[in-house]
Image 1 (cartoon, protein in one colour):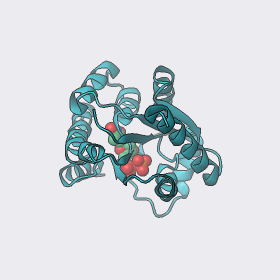
Image 2 (tube, helix red, strand yellow):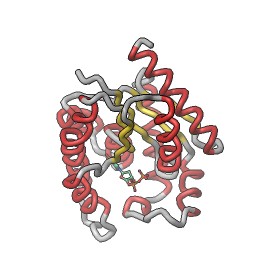
Image 3 (tube, protein in one colour):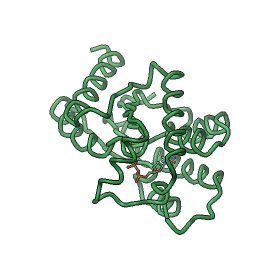
Length: 215
Ligand code: TYD
């Protein structure tokens, strides 16, 4: 068991994870004396970033759904071993932009792969290490897609080209995960103005931290 605190950030595309994370990090640095490490999936370390390039390449239209899943899982394993676990050992607070639930929501509910297989593969790749807290930023698919279409700086990747239906399935997947993991996953209404979303996220983190560390 490690002493750090692992928080994953999840949500459908266009939920605003990146913006929210950018604002949450400095606030956490003021509140906590531990190191705050922010990282992302797929990626976070060299090998996993290379796998990310393969997965998200717009030219890879022939990619099979199971190949895609296994690449995400492989990237996750490397990221966990090389970056997440060592930082948790050092008692850091590790914030990861997407983790195990993304595979279930996107490859399971979105692409229709067997959720039980993904759950097992996630457990295998992570040695059953679950986040201490998962912050789930919820938006309707219509709002998520509208935000994506308005954001000019964001790189458009292969997965952004998927249709509304895929986004809806992904969101449904997240809502199902939320129901099944109510202890671990905090629901945040990400349709609110960003400062309110950030406040809600901080409140959820502080609550869970107090619960786990008995402070
Ligand atoms: P990214 O540009 O990081 O999107 P976002 O800013 O929305 O997180 O691209 C990551 C994409 O990969 C995103 O569309 C979700 C998808 N994804 C999966 O489908 N499965 C996974 O296991 C992970 C980690 C990500």
